[in-house]
Length: 115
Ligand SMILES: [Mg+2]
Image (cartoon, rainbow, N blue to C red; front, side, top):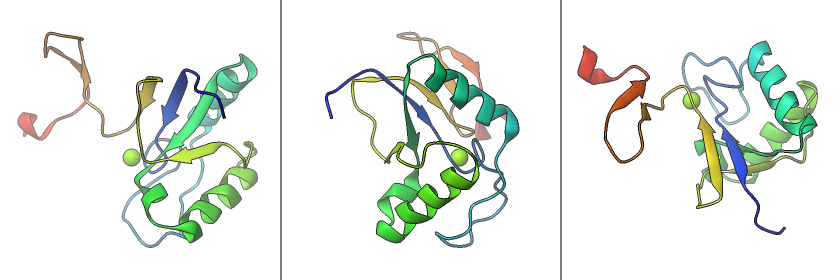
């Protein structure tokens, strides 16, 4: 597949409800707002990847995600990765702290620094 700009969407806690880790076969219910956002990206020609640590947990994990995507009404052949590269243009992630480029200034997100 040729390299093109892509948008990374985290799974647990972002695209799927998440409370506690169970196993690779257990993925929470889809988050409706995120489903609409991904569908908007796809409809408008953006390259979307599921960006999840689950991708490092073997073929069973990948198959479980593909099954989940299909049941959620998304293309089951979306690329699934646990790696970012220089083509990633956005990362949607419940754990991310948004930072202003080149300043270290925090723009959003909850940190343990706040506790
Ligand atoms: Mg997450």
